[in-house]
Length: 272
Ligand SMILES: NC(=O)c1ccc[n+]([C@@H]2O[C@H](COP(=O)([O-])OP(=O)(O)OC[C@H]3O[C@@H](n4cnc5c(N)ncnc54)[C@H](O)[C@@H]3O)[C@@H](O)[C@H]2O)c1
Image 1 (spheres, rainbow, N blue to C red):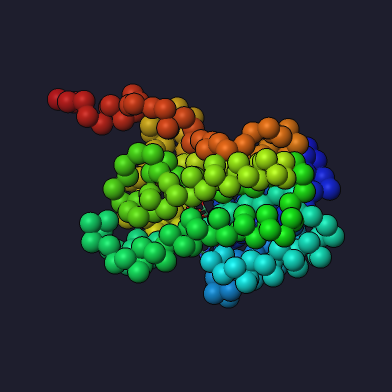
Image 2: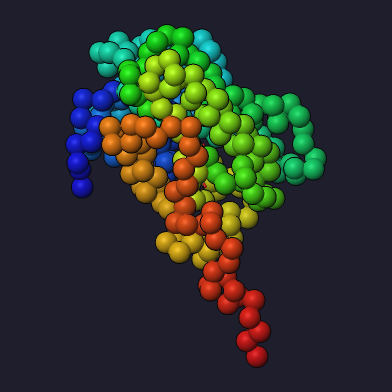
């Protein structure tokens, strides 16, 4: 169902790789709500992905940008304002990657140049995106910036590896930059902490199937899907959440406040 919540709003959406991507679902929902936007992803990902199909469906243009490159980001922001015909109202940062996770390297055996690469892509890129927007004065007043995160920033999930540290960094950047963006430009900055979701990035985590099933059994409302995340993001881009900022917001079916659930207890009860 559409509520026209984003009519007349312009944005940039990072990270739509394929139809499972949270950013893909968000682009579809933002389009349904009347928003217009530029799609962007790393040049290398776009050759593999099906982003053209999404662009056609949503009437969007695609501007390739490596989110770790300041030059690419400056070009992206300039071109987006030209294409969309004005300043930017919303930005979704939906980017994550750990080389250590990809190559099966344990948290206790990091290859630090890989760790650094992951931090740059997954966390520092959020600072770079915001600094580029801030310096270009590209955000409209009462605009909204959202990045996606996971609860491993607060609690231990061993196989989430160095991505846990990257997410803690990302959430801190949201608060720190959010202060300056709020004070100087009336722009809000938040992170959404999402349930495990079957996407390319998600499924890269070791033992993902057990991980997602456990979270589902622990959550009174079950895991939040990519579409649930897209819907939540739409509300944060809309004018209905104008003074929500510097927050890490859980979209996880209640998982983050659970100790144990009946369903999980049952697995430990002696059944003889
Ligand atoms: N899937 C989950 O279980 C889950 C849970 C919580 C949070 N998240 C977060 O959601 C976000 C989106 O991930 P997803 O699950 O939709 O997976 P995804 O694999 O579909 O998206 C990750 C995106 O990051 C992009 N990317 C990687 N390096 C880049 C770079 N240098 N420049 C620009 N883009 C780059 C990829 O091309 C891809 O589009 C990530 O921040 C992820 O950590 C995912």
